[in-house]
Length: 78
Image (tube, rainbow, N blue to C red; front, side, top):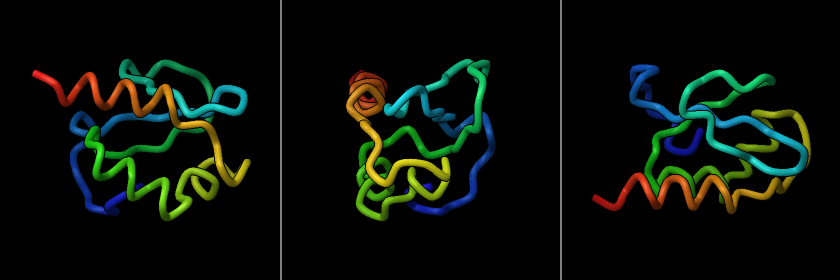
């Protein structure tokens, strides 16, 4: 979603909307429409700036991405 580069499905993070928030679905089992992005802060920031979540989920224009940001930050730290 963010950088629009193609990658294998296992290299991407599935994101779903639950209520008004975007949450990570690292197991790929949560119900609902999913969107994929690279698990990197740069890609997440780009997706937020481009308003890609609203288009991907066909829903609210500015969903809450705080939980998703925390997950990506945890994945980035060794």
